[in-house]
Length: 205
Length: 238
Image (spheres, helix red, strand yellow):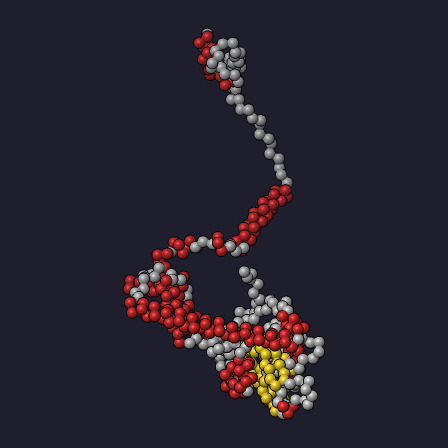
């Protein structure tokens, strides 16, 4: 009888909360396999039975869907806004297409004959000489202009101190002064731009 | 007295001279050698390869590809458009007509305004000048002189309060007043200004009384000493 009881305890150990395997005496045994019961108890699940699904108002359902959509769209807009802002130049990287396609984009190394190389070296030297002369001329011109102005100011001072002081004053209305630089060909009179007129609002640094 | 040195700065950039042209060509060559191929070039090469393969092996013609504009077509179309576009010529009609009153002359050089002025008993060409009135700074005198001589239409930017040059001359003895204390000569202070927009008012200055001259033409119109003095503060050394 004890053997049978132990077997029974092991089989029905799940019915009890306490650890039945270790203690083989003195726990109260609840057996459901004896007549006249013979019912099978399911395992102890520790969960409450599922709630009954209530019918939700379709309008509220739609509202929930719309809210989810709006949230997603807002996030998309935020991402796009970030994409429109230009990255600072320090953060820019070489685009991956160029890095991958480097092989097909490389030119064959051009053959530069020694004659061409020498010609280039000589031309560079000529250019440095030419530029140096130009620079010296510019410096001389600037000196000449400054000398002329100084002479004029001296003469003015001789004439009258008041006028001289007035002439030395800085004119704050002068700056900012913008002039458009020289172009290659003069503007065509009455030109109708095919792309239309536009005002450039890009930021300048 | 103060005078106005009004200049129309060059509108066109100057032509490159020999050495500049050679050097810029050399730089362009070096840049091309050191560069990578652009998208257009890569596309062009792949399409020429495809065309050759088509010819030799007669692969299946991909209709979509042939209908697209090839890189060669695009290049040709672009070159055509460039050739068809007519740029305005650098030498304007005023250059050909040698119209001294017109500002469109010599677009790649500086032009200086000269005005005919009465000096004693002669009429000479000079920069517009006038006497200073009491209570005016020299710059205000210069502005007033310009407005009186050329009208209000001319938009001009003066380069600051200080004069850029001075010209002293003595009155010839006939015109000096008998008293010893009268003025013996005059100092003319020049103020530099840049022409921005507008035209000289023809009511105030008739056609023969003013002209816009380039640097080379100045020497013939001005007296030696005056020219020497002025050229001290003028730019343009070519």
